[in-house]
Amino acid sequence: MAEIVIRNTNERITGDDNVREFLNNQNVLYEKWDASKLPLELQTNFQLNDEQKKQILDTYDEEIRDLAARRGYKIWDVITLSDATPNLEDLLNKFEEVHTHTEDEIRAIVGGKGIFVIKGAGDIGYFNVELEAGDVISVPENTNHFFTLMDNRKIIAVRLFIEENGWVAHPVQDPSFQS
Ligand SMILES: [Fe+2]
Image 1 (tube, rainbow, N blue to C red):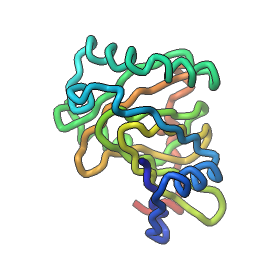
Image 2 (image 1 turned 30 degrees about the horizontal axis):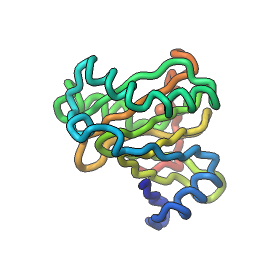
Image 3 (image 1 turned 180 degrees about the horizontal axis):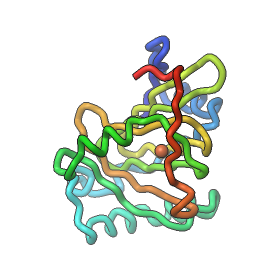
Image 4 (image 1 turned 30 degrees about the vertical axis):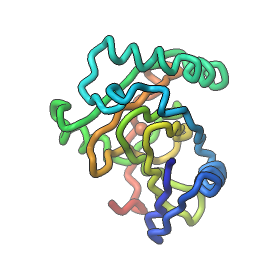
């Protein structure tokens, strides 16, 4: 279950109803997949080969096609990050820059953990969405955000795209963001 931390106040929002209400008010899509559908050995393997990635996509084929039908995604893949990822530090440094996309950024977490940092509407400022296996989130298009790992530094996620080049990151210099 995702949890929210509002960065300006350190307020933590927990509990299914509260998290859903908060994200809904911020126009952030939040849904759940059944994390237990995926065999544990795949949920905890952060060096997946192509065959294992295909197995993950097959496991969630119904959920993926449902999202695609509702929201127009045409391509999808599996990404994994961990200390076994070459140049993980460089990648994280690149990820941890506030940016936007012209497409929404949707991720279904199927193993490990991660955080999206998103700029909220009005006075809320930036908030963290801490995600674990089963959480599905979509950062709306043209919304300041970035992604990073949590302390365990491990994640497996399904990504869906409408078109490949809609997902190019546009860096944003935002003086209101404090890391
Ligand atoms: Fe992004």
